[in-house]
Length: 166
Image (cartoon, rainbow, N blue to C red):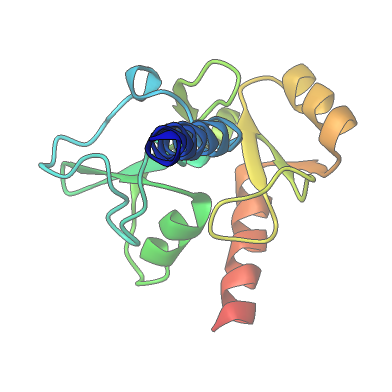
């Protein structure tokens, strides 16, 4: 009888521990937000997946980018997937990025990118996080390192990263 009780208790503990580990790992990913914080610009059926690589946009929301092509909006998990789409020679209009402080989309021309911080990146070893104001970018840089640059310089870094991977 004591073996049965021990087995039940042990099983419950294992189940409890495994679900706790999952919660910890999801909440510890810097790029992630809760689903109620995600802004979906795309009206597509599968609007929570990057159209280039299929990655979850909630899980990688803080590195999300978006742009328009022929009245359709594409929302990407990262600047890398945006750059990959541009690599095909198309012109995307009104490119935007998530400001990691407010979690709102801003025009890339207004963004300050911190590139190469110690915070893990998305689709790259070299992280790229955007901010709507320079002070927020500087505070992030002081804490995590990296270099502050504009969108076009960050896009160049992303393009180099793809060349090295191909």
